[in-house]
Amino acid sequence: MSFRVEPDPSLKDALEQADHPLAGIWVCSASPLIAEICAGAGFDWLFIDGEHSPNDLQNILAQLQAVRSYPIVPVVRPAVNDPVVIKQFLDLGVQSLIIPMVNDAQQAAAAVAACHYPPKGVRGVGSALARSARWNRIPDYLTRADETITVMVQIEADEAVRNVQAIVETEGVDGIFIGPSDLAASMGVIGQQNHPDVVAAVIKSIDAAKAAGKYAGVNAFDQKTARQYMDAGADYVGVGADVALLARATEALAASFASGSQAPAPKSY
Image (tube, rainbow, N blue to C red):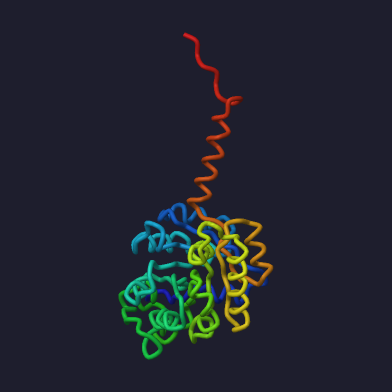
C-alpha cells in the first residue's frame, strides 16, 4: 500500500501563521546544493528564480527536492506569465508562485486562471503524472489543489503601481511582490532603488494590498531598506541572494589578502 501524502504548506499558510514579517533568500545559482545550504540557514522562505537565473524544469525540481526536509517555504518565479510555463511549474510541485511583470487586473486574472483547474481556471489536468499530486498519492488532489497554491503577482512597473488597487482586488490573487529595481527603471531612475519616488511607490503598493486584505512582499537587499519596508507593513521581504552573497564575500576575502600590508614579500633568488 502506498503512503498517504498531504500537501506541504504554501506561502499564504506561512504568512497567515506568522507574527512577524518573513525574511527570504533568493537562490539564483541553479544549484540544489546551494539551495540546500540556504534552506538550512534559518530564513523563512526561499525564492527560486526562473526569470533572471539559469534555471530549467529539472534544476527547479532538484532544488524543490533538496529543500523539502527543511522548515522553509520554497517560492518560485517563472520567467513569464504564461499558462503553459505555469502549468509545468505547478506539476513539478511548486505551490507558491510569484508571477512577474503583472501590470493590470487583466494580467493578474490571467495569472490566477493559469494556477487553477477549470471551471475557475485553465490549468491542464495531469495529476496522475505529476509530482504536484505525488502521482495521485495526495487524496482528492484535484478538488483540493486550489487550497495548496499561493499566487503572488509582481508589481515592478510604474503602470502596475497606477493599477495596483485593481490588481490586488482581483479574485484569486493572494498578494503582491514588489520589485524596486524594475520599478526604478520604469520611473526613469534606473539603478536607484532607494530613490524617494521609488520608495513612495513601494509603500503605496504595500498600503493598497493591506487595504484589500492581501499580502504584500518586496525585494530589498539593503538591510536598512528591508526593515523600513517591514515597518511599513510588508509581510515578506527578499533580503539577499546566494550569488550576490558569494560575490561580495569572495571579493572581501580576496581584498584582505591583496592589500600591500598583507601581501607576501617577494622571494630573493
